[in-house]
Length: 557
Image 1 (cartoon, rainbow, N blue to C red):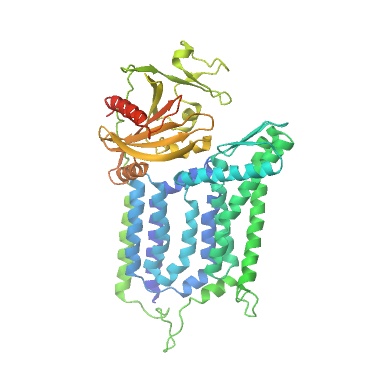
Image 2: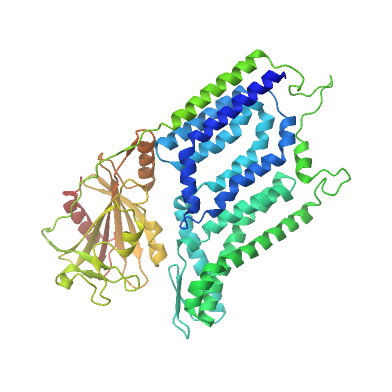
């Protein structure tokens, strides 16, 4: 390759990379906030790109040696990645932007330097997946991890002779040292799983010479993290039961994670040694050539010399055709234009919220409002008819509000919540709630993700329609309450009605990404309870529910 052609290719690639970094400035700023947010617990994200760059630095010699001709296939592979990043930018879907960015980290080297160079970028690029915040998308996994950890710790504590009771994800003891340990979402173990997976992937890359052995060690990270989290919860309960609950839930709770993580790392190293002994000694690790394991693993993929004494790739001394030089120039202009266009994504339009207002009177029903104590330790609920105009909790004197303390502290400020209670002549109580989302995406979540953590069992999911509106019903069985029923449905300002949470998420993502519009979704839930229990399988209960849903249908858009 002539000198001017080398300079042209490197210059075009450098300009393209700079424009790509500029195009993803919004994504970088968001990740900087996520990595610094204690609630996200993703501080390991700062180290992930540093390690990816280090891997590329250690392979710089091999990358230069296998550099070949530019590839049209690499350019075609870049286009869907650019499309994903554009949709992510316009729809405020940062995770979609990250997927596009990671894809470009693999396809751009392919387009400029050929397939063999791109293969060296696969692992460093895929390692960047550990910067993608997935906790909000894995809520269904989180609740199962919480229940598994609390159940396992409960069984072990009972085996140790400690009298404890499990209530959902909470372990309660009223013995000599009473305590209540709740395995909350940050303690589910999901975040430690992600961090340990990243560490294990890095450790496996440099200690295991084959992809099969790396995958085997990487697979060990999940059970090790789960085991470590269970040990941590168990130790907190033991310290609380044998010493002091305040110390266990305070100082020890905050710093016990480091000890458990060290134990998990020790187990990871032990698993790596077991895999190495079972699979045999690594090739080249102790040979006389002095070739390090990584170089030995990558040298196998180097192109071999052909019959004429030249590499199968384009030799460094040969001149590239002029068409390739034109390709470099055109590719750089095309991609730079797309990346700069990405920075000009317009702000989405926020739609007006749907109009919802529960009637203050309903024929055949007694109407009441519900009030929540804003003290975390008290957390009592009252009916407005009982309070006689009082605005403070009679037990702890804390303020009362129509929204619970959790709803006021966790949900975004622009979330609208409307609640009301209706009692029928058959002593059936209907607690109706409408949650209208704001500009964010965290206002609405499914009841299936929070009620099991409170000790409720949810069974018999059923889909049905009333007056043309779809509903999803679930039987709710509490530990100390008769069976109840939970019914919910979704709709937005455009008149779209659905009972499927998955369909609502898809429509919301489509509107944000393609239509550049933030929909205002409303989730209407109806909690139905009675002294003798309530079941959709009983004809009388079903008829009573459908009668009530037809009545409130008159006030819903």
